[in-house]
Length: 334
Image (cartoon, rainbow, N blue to C red; front, top):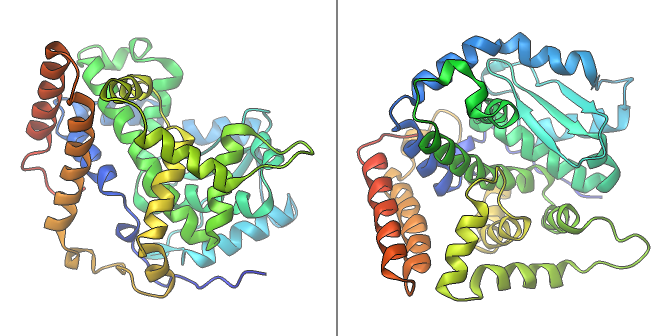
């Protein structure tokens, strides 16, 4: 039985991945970004999004999947919800074999789990997913993630309110941020479970399913994750970037590797021990260090991808880096 330390007054800044904030700042700097958010949110609205699930999903409560509801209450307590007196986000389960979960909405976001997710994962792994999604809400991701989901569902060209917007740069920047926001929420997931092994095991099952009567090896999977991230040539790095450019989620191995490194850095244990940024004191964090970390994260990735490839790809990588610097230069806190 795990005894979880409540993270009293923890601020989402504590678990934000530097690449999350960097990618969001780059997205906000795009011409037309605010207009896209305003138009889509105005067209669909809070009730329009929520009614999709009120009409065709099951709202979880004390008598509706009471064990899942009790676990959710424990996650809320561990993460010290509510910030600023907000009502707890509603939790829905929707019937589909596809393994998925999401935090969506604008003013009053809510969490949705697929029945396939509950069937795949053990309770502690389900707890990780719940804390991950709550992390999205507490970090303020849900407005932009809901915009992204609407665009992914309908397609950019099927939304007439976006007719005047340059679509491809916006779509690529939105998906880049969407992927990086997952890295922040994964950290929240581990803080909510306070069970690193179960947190990391979640990615193994998301990638390869249940054991099915056989055995599965988390340590072997983490070694595989390290091989994916560090192995191969510079050309492999370019191919990896191309493989993920239009995905809304990073590969599971990448997420597992990122989360394991964060735990091994000591940051996770420090926060569970009570040392973290508290709500209302966010301005006290070393912002310049955070910006430097984010810049280094992208610079290292771009440098590895362009190191030994041909001149044409090198010029493209240089252009990408220059564009990112221009987009993120002078942009304030996310």
